[in-house]
Image (cartoon, rainbow, N blue to C red):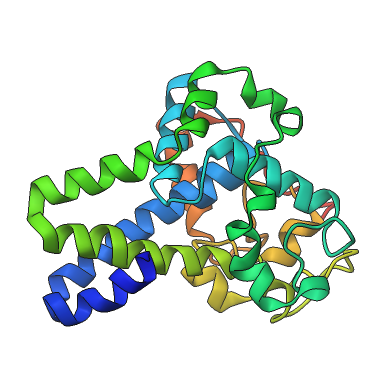
Length: 252
């Protein structure tokens, strides 16, 4: 339905460069929620932060409409435990591109949150509440956009932007296990890809990540662009996050 709205809205509202700028701006902000929040913080604990900011990270991440932060992180931890092996939730190698890209997240068999796999964050009742009510964040975003800019703002900022964000995010599950180079001989088919790193704020250095999952910097070298890491580095200088776990030289 949201895809249909995103496509149909172009005919209804017409092209707008300002609308497109809003969509890309919110894409970038929410992509950080996905990469810096869902992934590097909740799934891998690559840095530390306060209880207040971790709630803000979860809320921002959930504006992407990719379900709850605890749900996302628990499923991602399972992916790493069985990457490209039987039991992997979204293996492009075993189950094909379409399933790894969108099929798995649409499947009812993966609706439940495995709280046993995410005990470290499930002890916070506010995160559990937000995880159970995962549509609150995108709804708040949508209402805010409508109140500020009307239907056009809602269309570009939520529907159009979210479709781009979904497919940007999902390329990491699908294309980074099919397309790119392999620096490290990991047991899965993870690959590094500059183009995917650019559209996902650094997540495209996927072979690096599978080689050393806990690193806050998935771009291991200065020439590997990793926007998420740059933002987290700035936040660390401001004292908002700390204990950034960098990839050690022995791992490289």
